[in-house]
Structure formats: C-alpha cells, structure tokens
Length: 443
Ligand code: 5AD
Ligand code: SF4
View 1: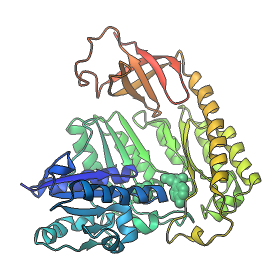
View 2: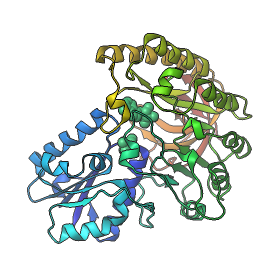
View 3: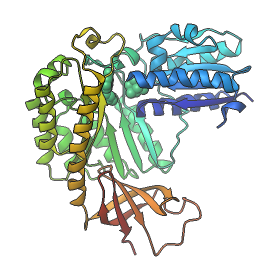
View 4: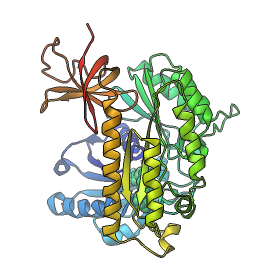
C-alpha cells in the first residue's frame, strides 16, 4: 500500500481541501501516515496570503528534503502552488506535483501520472466551473464538519492574492449542500460550518436560485444539527436577511466574522473594498439591534500603502465604536499580481509594528471589558476536548468564545472522550481578554 503524509497551512478552506484530498487518496488505496519518514508521497497544502506564510512553505520543503527526502515524491498543493506554478520545480527540484485548488477535481488523474513515473505533473488551470465536491472527504473532527458552499472569489481587493490563487466564484447547488449537511447530521455531526471566500455572494446555480440567507436558514432546520456557522463574509454583500435568519433560527450561531480591514474611507477606497465606513457601520447596526446577542469579529490590515496617522486613527476610532468580540490584525504584506504592488509610499516595518501594537493594546482592553460582562451568566458550550495541563475541559460557545471549565461532579477524565462533542450549560465565573472560565452547572 502506498503511504502519504500531508501538512496543511492556511485558512479553513485549505484545511477542508486537505480533508477532501485525504479522502480521495484513501479511496485510491493510499494509506495516511503521521511521520514524514514513513511516507512515499509527501504533500504540502500551502498558503500565500502573506509573504511569511509563503516563505514558511519553502523552508519546510527544504527541511524535509534534507531530513527525509530520499526516494520520496513531493507535491505542493494550494495557493503557493497556484501562484508560483512551474517556478516551484526550479526553486525546489525535488517536487514532482504542483496543483492549485481549482484543479483538485483532476487529482485522481494526476496521481496516475505520478504513479507512472512522471516527475513534472501540474494542475494549474483556473478555468473551471466545477467545485471540488467529493464523496470521499476524510474529516478530522468527529463532531464539527466543514461544508464548502462556494469556491473562489470575484472581488478584487487591492492587497489580496485569493482571486489569483483560487480562481473565479463557483457556487454549489443548494441541493448538494443540503444533502451533505443531512448526511453529516445522520452520521452524528451536530455542528457544521459553511465555507467560502465570500459566502455572502453565494447564489444557488439551480433553478431554486437561493441566496446565502436562505441556504443558511434551511441548513439550520436540518434535524440533528445544533449549530451552524459560516465564514467568511464580505461587508458589501452582507444582507440584513442574514441577521434576520440568525434571529429566527436558534441553530444558527450568533457570531458573524465581518472583516473591515480599515476604518478609513480613503484607505478602503485604495483597497478597492467597495464599501464605505458608513455602509459597514450600517451592517454593524443591524447586528447590534438584533434580538440575539451577536458576537462580531473582524480582520484589520495595518500599514496599507500610504496609510497616514490620521487614517490609522480612523481605524482606532472604529474599533472603539464597534467593540469587537475579537479580531485578527495583520501587517500589510506585498503580494504578487495584486494591484497594491504598484502603490508607492510603502509604510516602514517599524511603523507597521507600532500600529499593530497600538491596535492590539486597545482591542485587548475592549475584550477584557466585554468578557467581564459574561461573568455570572450561563452559556451553552460544545465541548471540544480536555486540557491536561490546566485540568479543564475546553468548550466553545455559540458566539465562538472559548470557555474552559471544570466539572467537579464528574469522574476525572481518563481520556478526553467522556464529554467531547456534548453540549453543556456552564456558569461563567472568570474572564480574561481571550477566554472565559467557568463551572459545569448541569445536574
Ligand atoms: N497583507 C496583509 N494581510 C492580508 N490579508 C489578506 N491579504 C493580505 C495582505 N496582502 C488579511 C485580510 C484578510 C485576512 C484573511 O488576511 O485581513 O481578511
Ligand atoms: Fe491562504 Fe488565502 Fe489560500 Fe486560504 S485562500 S490558503 S488564506 S492564500
């Protein structure tokens, strides 16, 4: 039996692609191994969203070659593969397969070529209307599953490689999404996460022609599914109907990740984000006025070319106004092919770091304050596992907050199987900037 090893970098879309790649390989008779030394086929599913992520891939490739490269076949998948294409063969001559995500539907054919001894196999076409929709997905987590609803991205944010690495938007039919969700529920999954680079521009290609809010709502009605999440949203396409759906359907998690990137209109314009600060804030208003307490999280880029102090201050002002539950902050990183590459007036690294730290500090105090407001409340968690270092169970609230808890009346866990996957009510007793802590209150 042929053995393979796979390592995955990047976002949830990439993590889920790897689950499909693994499923396809298992179906073709391969066996997955955890040690690269024991594999004949070594795969890296790569990310190129920022320069650092990309460099990490090449570093890993070299390191593996030195450590355990003899006689092995190497493949580079995902976003770096799509972006760098055949240049990877020059930079890392021990690589035999280079394939971007839009070509994974051809994976079985590419495997046949590799097995036949071809040492330069590529899958780099973005010219596809297909989605990588496979019945052979091998999921990592037995309780929480990803479901792709849309692949690719049609936006053209000036900093972003994704339209180049994942190709144009392709939505799956609602029927195929619901079939997958039902079959997951039947096999014991209670939580699903609908995935896409921009889920809000989902448009059912079948005559039903559902929009995203409808698909979300229908998924939330499936028997057995207790939680439905989605990521990621683009503010321009984020409609009020999504907030209404969350309000009306308890199975839909009260968490929305809505990347703002900047609080300054002029920066948003240069980023080609296609919304203004005021338009973004209108969406925040919808959520703040909702019946349910919707947790809002975001992504911010600091040091976009030409970002002045005044523009950066607009971002500081915005995060004070919104009071996000949490955020990811990124220093702007130049990416190949992107419009912003041509922009002059790059911000020095030290200045990016200064802004990053300022934002982080301000957000930390917002989170401390917000989290303190949960102390004394009961929250339902989906249990994810047990942390032996702290002797606490790890739970996740519907708002996607980490809530670590103890349960004195339960037998000490020999394995993390006892509570993992269960839903429990927890009394929040303490709060930090990044997580909550509490005690189980179930009888
Ligand atoms: N530089 C820095 N951050 C970036 N992001 C995307 N492209 C870049 C880039 N070139 C960030 C955005 C996006 C998140 C996934 O990564 O904030 O929402
Ligand atoms: Fe990285 Fe973006 Fe590709 Fe995800 S889509 S792996 S974040 S470059």
